[in-house]
Image 1: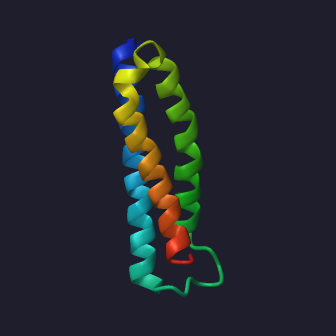
Image 2 (image 1 turned 45 degrees about the vertical axis):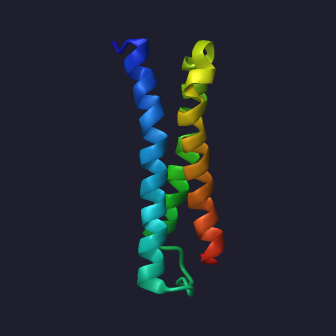
Length: 96
């Protein structure tokens, strides 16, 4: 079984990695299709949606695990929130 510090580290890194992957998928879609996505949502849209929704419970778990030292965990939480918003903003910016 995992100890609390290992779980906290995983919950800190996973959303950041997932947001970066989602952002890479958006960039790949822009390179492949430009601002004119295909009529059918491709695999990119489905993976993006799964990543973005799956991040939220992990972020909540990170907050729950960091509750006692939340002030020290704020930079990580801010990075998670910023990258999550950046991935969503990229979709909106490129009208995908």
